[in-house]
Amino acid sequence: MKLFRSRRFDASHRHRQIYSAYEIAYSVIDLLAAVLFIVGSVLFLDDATVKAGTWLFIIGSVFFAGRPAVRLARELHLAGLGDEGQQDRAEPGSASNRAGS
Image (cartoon, rainbow, N blue to C red; front, top):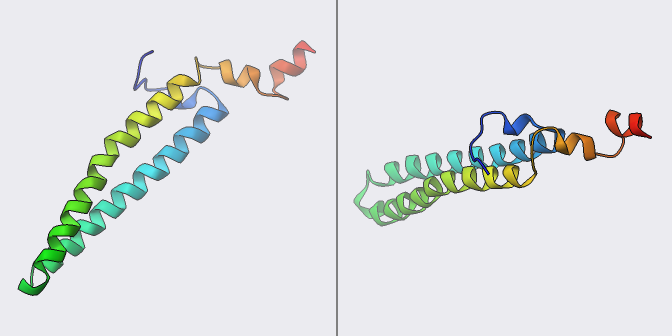
């Protein structure tokens, strides 16, 4: 099983759906991490809010650590679907199923 193959996401309709869902999750995590770092940076400007800023940096770091975890989960999920084109042939109502009936 080869991971991070460049065209695996386009092997079938199901592959594209799964890839899109993981890309949304990745983007949300990325955005949240960036927002936490920005707000944490602003909180560092006042001595009274440094502790809150520190916690936001820690939480943002956890989000940034989640990014590669999402990518790895996506690749494992796509790899588990099988080879290219295999999913399309198995989908009900696909052209290959109708031709074979």
